[in-house]
Length: 319
Image (cartoon, rainbow, N blue to C red):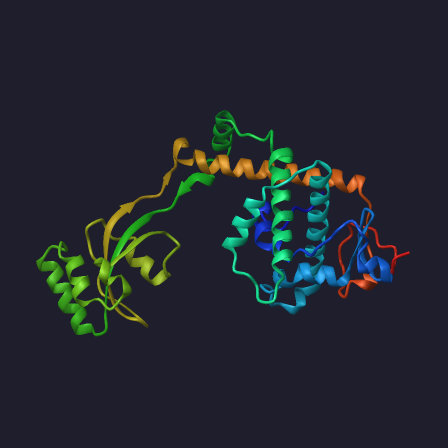
């Protein structure tokens, strides 16, 4: 089975990375001329340097040296898949509006020392792939309401929401001040919580009357959850001591765990099914392209240990 590109919505990532593609005309690259090709896709050879250009920014987020070969293996397969998709887009005559290329280029911070023409070419290639996939591979994919309802009924357990609380907080630096605030809250029946938070709390939420927003069970540290989720709406906690100081919490609202109704879950289900079908369609398209396009990996020229088995490996140099 073909492994999908490196994202659940793979084509969203191509535009971000597109500026790293090099100028690849139909003329054989330096790898072919010098007999140092790292990979062949159809009748086009790519050198180790061309692969490194593709890898460079993508590898910046990976810090574990032990996984370097596996990461490069996955990126090499991504490289092949993207080249296959781009070639098919070209075969079908897919074109993009130069204004769209300029708009994307204008939204990116231009890397120092990078040729603007190379950046524009990379963006153009990425947009061509996006358009080809959206208009040809994903064109007939749809999800009906009946399919969403069936999925909902078969996966009810996926649509149970945990307890949710809407919290306010007052954080102070001394136990004496915390106790004074507790007394003032009792006197005001907690209705003065927001006012006291603005006056005394040293937390960033003070300017918003201590409003922290909503949290579901599992979001907060266990020490806080044990107290907070026992509180009823409109009540305050006892003072809770942490490394940050002395906290008093007010439960503005509490929503108990419940089963989402279909209309509440419908948009999430539709997105799940759509992404799954797009992923499968893209995998099938890449499988089809691989069946029609020979791909060879020249392991000795890669500069890393390719651990994949998807492509043939005839040797260290181009025949």
